[in-house]
Length: 115
Image 1 (cartoon, rainbow, N blue to C red):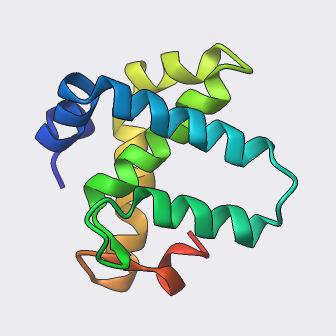
Image 2: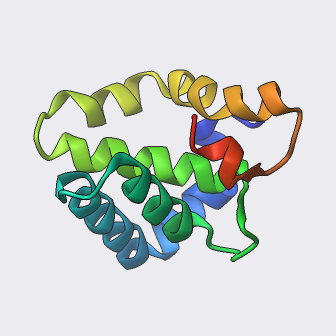
Image 3: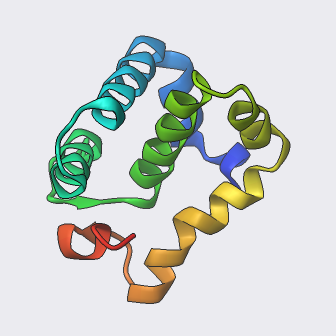
């Protein structure tokens, strides 16, 4: 795993696809606020961030998902985006954990749900 700040795919998404990144954050925020069950919200986010449509999430997709979650929550509290910038290694640990636990390069839906 490359450190968050060095991940080319995350920088590319954030820089060259700014509209897509903003759209993902908006959909993530709306998902958090809707009245669906936690399982339904998780399924929606899983499908939304499965950008390669492989029915599994790559580490980069999980990183973008967590980033969008933090940005969406950051609209409610200003501390989260600053934390993301100040300590990106904490995000790395959150993303890395399920991949190490399952000894895999991609998370299936069954592996994603508990995470």
